Image (cartoon, rainbow, N blue to C red; front, side, top):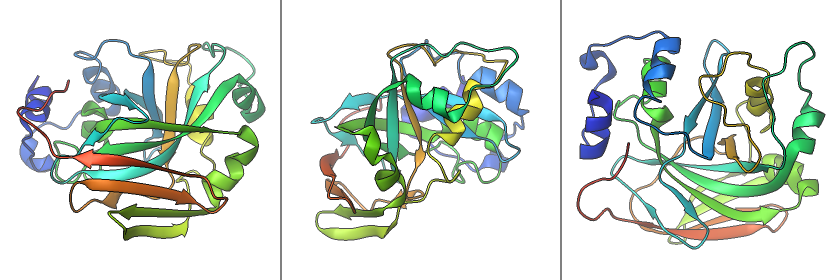
Length: 243
């Protein structure tokens, strides 16, 4: 698959120059051709409002480093781990309260986004989906109490690289609520994959947009309620590894 080959080599291309313009349903299927069922996912919504998911890979734990490739952007997000299955439901839709109750753990996380398409999803969201929505690595950070969810997703958020401020503003999710896209996907009646099983980790979308990262180094993330964590971004060694 050409996208997978480009991702593994690190090559990038303009969206229009790629020469393929799939519909969202086709692109959504393509991304899973070479991706086995995983347990870590990102959820989002197309510009037209269709819920979509992609696998997170590589997926690393707190204490590990993320590998930064040139052009990667950084997103700070809320990740949830499910304590019960959320199967496709016919009839009455899942409510936000039901989704919240199905969450066993809340954590903060850091995602690197770098699509093979230079414009990411700005020109063609379906192609962006075919490229796993640009996921280039995810670090699962520390736990926080569910009572602090609103503080994390709406309070002050600061992001520094080697002490240099990169972001300092109120956190803001694109949906206004970090659980919104997860609720949307849970209520999708046609899932090509089913990531909403007990034990699955789902990251819910950026709280700071996509922040340019000028180089490797130590990243510190701080929230207005005093919650904080840090991690390292390192340069790649040898060939890229990906799917």
